[in-house]
Structures are given as structure tokens and as C-alpha cells.
Image (cartoon, rainbow, N blue to C red; front, side, top):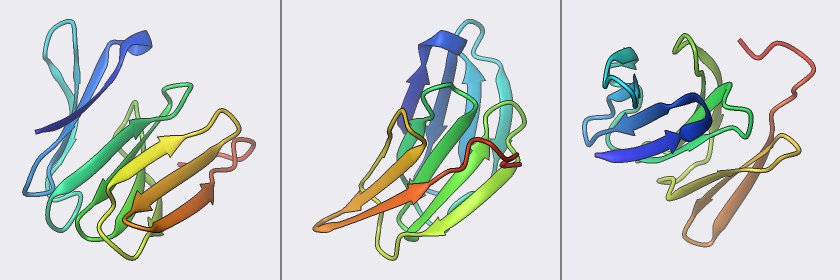
Length: 115
């Protein structure tokens, strides 16, 4: 299982080979929310936004999905086009998805509600 941990909020996000996404508390291992088949195929990358309010997931399906960390609601989706290998957030609301030689940069507007 692929896992991303956000220590400031004691949250753990994990994804599996079937595309299932789960966010749980590190303190109790209690599942806060889960999305079956969030991606078509394996979840290959996970990253918390710097403030912990959003979770980005990337998959074998070439999609980058942005989730509201508290509720698990899908906020945005981006088509990377190829299997996503890495996702990274910057402090200035940019999200980068990477696969092979392809790098895409997405701006996630902080001033308007994303969900």
C-alpha cells in the first residue's frame, strides 16, 4: 500500500492496487473516510497540501484527483495523460505531477472554495 502521512493533523492516506483510497487517524487507526475505486487501477502517488486541507492522488489511469481532507469529497480532477509517478505541492498553491519525462503543473486557486 502506498501511504502519505501528514503529521500536523495526525492523518495517514493510503491507496492500493485496486484504486481504493483511505484516510485514517494515526492516533487510533480509525478510518475517517474512504473512496472505493477512486482511480481506475493502482493509486501510484499521494501528497498532502502544505496546509493539510487537501489531498492529491495520482493513478495508473493518468488522473490527478484533489480531495477535501476532512470529508473525502472530490474537489477537482486533472488529466495528466500518463501513469502518475510523483505528486508534489508547492507553498504557492501549485501542484506538480510527474511521469517519465512529462511534468505538468496545476494551479489550485486558494481564494475560492475548491469543494
